[in-house]
Length: 566
Image (tube, rainbow, N blue to C red; front, side, top):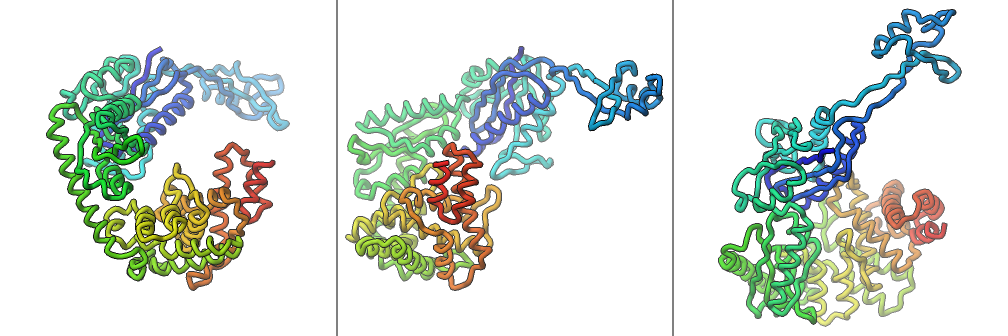
């Protein structure tokens, strides 16, 4: 049986769009095979900035034949007293394309009907697949799409070519006015023009011959190996952040790693500042020694070969030097004052148009922290640390460094608090309270940090949900799902028996307005649904989770414990 190759060639796709699109492409193709009754083997996808591709081995040449029963008129109408077919039966049989003699009768709900048993032979896969594959491609959803040319088609980026082969046969797939052929395109600078693909099994080899490593796992291995080798030349190891690595894997078709250097004097900057500049802004890997101290090197990934690397390296070093000089300037300017000296400026920083300023949010956090401290009967030292951390928690938002590098919020607050001589538990809590910041991030690890994170997230949920900004679909601009996830994790980690409804009511009072019970109900249900998702992801049956939630009210810890015990 032949193999299927489908390649959608595009302008450069956003790296974060490629993996989800490939998953949809594979799922859609499998569903199409099932719906069309076409037997097929495993599906494998390939993705790179300019292409989404799929190879399926062992595709049947024809659909499986099918047998279906079509119910016709009642038996007493279809046949006379002697059992001979009437005109009603003859017409029904003709409509189904079978001789009237092949009609049968079936009893349905106590009544007998004439039934036609229709056997349909399968059509060729080459006939039925093109329309289905086009529908699969059109059905891929992206966070953002665009239109191009004169048509109405939408995709993440303009579609420029399509390869669709079943064996050596070109399938008549057409999407957005682009008709499929057997010609792919290589790397923009290394490829040397269009290349014909004889079949699915030659796809990877043909692309490699024109400068494209289409297998993302192979690109990952190339980057890791080259980065490790180059870092060792400087007596270090690369800091391979998984998110940056994924972005670079999906953002290149022929990765080439190079090592650059920066002035040692910049190592005087706090490590998180250096890493943020390199990683978040320049897309470089940092390099550290065996003691996990940063070294004055970086690793950049270009999409191309190893020609002219010295010139490319100089360009990267020049850009990084300028960015680090900016960071040093902002850091030095910030350190002219203590962290608490920035608090008055929070009056001029808007939190949300309907919810006031960051200064007002800070005051609410202090009030909520005092309430939680009383509920949990914290000792004097812990209470003092929690209130101090709440007071300083948002001060770094008005520093120059966070203004330039927003990813450092909380981190800079912790660093500045440490430099100011604040107690370690206060500084650590400031740095932790935003966590988790993404799905694979851990919750705060200290008690004070976790409690500060809890009240911060409750305040956010109460405020944003209270003004009607409940997230819908995939849109969640205020990070409410992440906040609810954090509440669930913190309550379970510290085993807190805190009534969520009462805490939300205290938070609502801090906004100077009354949230109706309906608004609080929405918030409690929103967090309970996040707990439900977490427990189901942990392998607990959904009916057991629902039963536990039904009898636990707003006590999230009790609900989680019951679900695990059932």
